[in-house]
Length: 298
Image 1 (cartoon, rainbow, N blue to C red):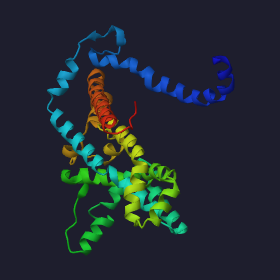
Image 2 (image 1 turned 90 degrees about the vertical axis):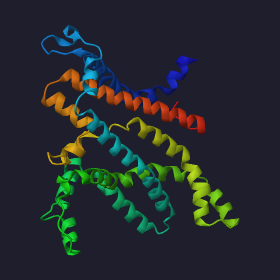
Image 3 (image 1 turned 45 degrees about the vertical axis):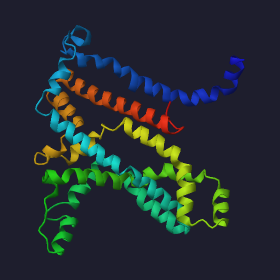
Image 4 (image 1 turned 180 degrees about the vertical axis):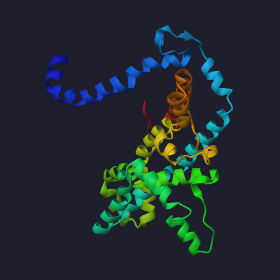
């Protein structure tokens, strides 16, 4: 029975094989090196030859001068991003209600386009827009009678600039999944609700939102699994010595301590701590979703 089933479905296994190979080679095999977080790694001795120090590297990080600042910045930026999670849902619901086909395609193109701009180019655009001398934002501020603001050198502006620019870049792309879920809702439900006198807002509230709620739940769980992983590239590109107090996060600290300072064991311990927090949050949110709804990852 199993042999005949495999004979019928082997093309499907061939299709999924590259993904399995990718995850094994680039996600699971590198986990072998995680053990250096518990050792005093010396390149000449190798992983096995280096001395075992247990949790000393983690204790060193928790007691370091930068621990409070790194954790605070990472949590505040992550919470700010999580607070904007419903925005993509609102965009998808709004786009779904547009009836003019050409206008709908135009709005979709405008909202999707920033996603395809590279991180380096996007960061350069943000710096150029916010320049105190030539930036379009400060030109507008001056036109209103205000004084130019050096946004990129003021720590109090960094979190807002980082999160809002990221939301702008990924807003339309994040709505695609919800739009796909909305297309799966039975049109007869809307027809019946219209006949019963339901308004557009009532149909959105009682048909569309419940219809895409499983998708929202799954994406919220996945976001919780990457809650502490803000993303290194854009933070690093927007970071400078003047805004370091607000822009220094765990990922940038791992880069400095590991690749620049050569503290491989210490940086591995910091990165492992970050991943462990993400895993715990993923399990907690997944368990909560399973308890209060029928949708969860496991």
